Length: 126
Image (cartoon, rainbow, N blue to C red; front, side):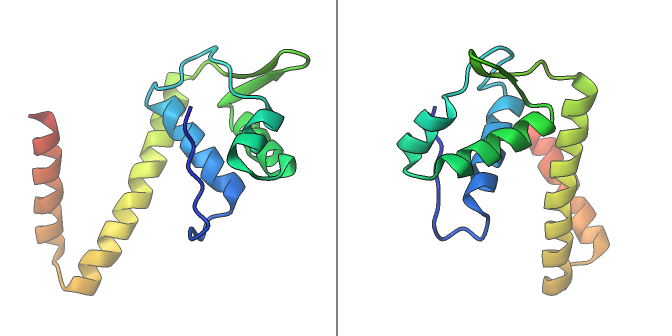
């Protein structure tokens, strides 16, 4: 499993780990029951603190993406379809907020933005 850490990113390292693992789970790259590397192993592979990796795993567990079994490890939790949809909607809203800001800054009208969104959506169905 590959996780990339960027020192130039404004996001803290634990958030970079969390977001990449969430993405892998939501896209199905990691499935229910798949084992994640141990906290110590991941920290060693990424050359980061165990505390940082522990924070990422705790956040993933709090959000329902993984479950930790004492003495066994951390595994991808079963995903509730409604939860997956809600998480996808949250990500879409984040990207749309950025798109709206860019459109306003560039003088793009709402009608033009809606047309661009419709075109992008239709291209994805092809």
